[in-house]
Image (cartoon, rainbow, N blue to C red; front, side, top):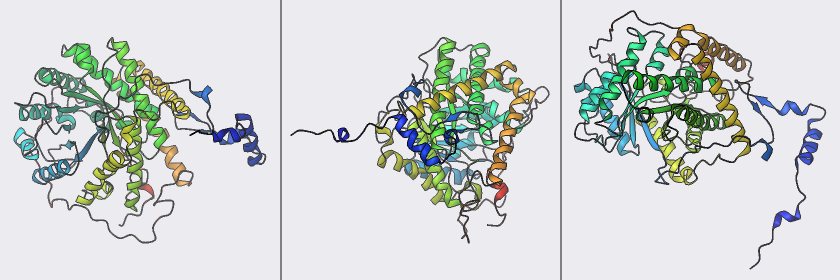
Length: 485
């Protein structure tokens, strides 16, 4: 049986022919009108050729061992009541999640009310820590929470604990630290060193630029803050806690935000991997593993017509899978409305299950690799993120840079420009400024406790509190939504 090449019957569609047709369709408008720029000033062209593929990601994500479950499906739990939080953790793990991200807040306002080892034990009752990884999000309470988790995992040395210590994000978002912030960083580094030998698979720090992203910043600002955080954590573990460089690098996880802009999110993930490879090379450990946790953006979620959040979250999950994230956290689609119902939590899991098991996103490693447009965008994003990182280092490092406020001012400028674009309809918000619903039926959420449970916990520390201009989280749609639901 012979195979005839069908393409030979068609004329070669070279770039000159394509441009001629496009210019005819533009009817006198300049060809450059089709070229767009991002918030970082990166160029997006309407057509790419092999000549544009100057950047090729060297340290590409490796294919997953399980093609049907190529990444860690991580469910987020933040119910204030410890008993209810435990029920949700168990439901997530039996419903398809591989791990959980547990938010803790002794005040019960932004997470499970836990302020002791016993409280954490109640939240994690029935969870086998060597089988189901637990990642923490405990803010300034992080070192203590890490100690509690390590004790609960005693007897399971292979437990892949994820302490997610992240004093940079805590400081940047709050604008204040209990005591001197460098002391908080040192305490986190000492905690990492103390548990490193007992738990060889443990990761200690989460280096991310989420504070810049959720405050309205650009991809480059997020990546620059991520890289500066990673360097700060590495220095602290090596210089203050005496860890070896290679071991310290292995204890850091990168955090990257993903949103409804699929191509930009894919490029951001791949750029984060390129930046990490360069940092590891400079540190003298070029083979250091790169682990990335991708979280869906809260700023993209809408309160009005919240069902449209399912579209945004699906796009974010797709980008995370294609971009090579090792763990993916998707928020429940009702997050702007209150505590998520069982339906919203199930949807957050099922979006990822469909992407993995039905769409088969794990069957190709780095599917964006070799795509001229994405290779070019990855290169531009990586260079812009590295430039931001260098500026933060020139300001004296991440904490000193936050004190000086340059980054916050630049984030605010981009935030205001984006809000103006939304107000003028240049940037549409589906379900809010574009195709808003005529009538909305209430969407069920989990009722909050009449009184948030509180646990006594003292955050006081020696020295005067460090302060900076906060990077306050926002939602793009908040200013354009009706207040009644």
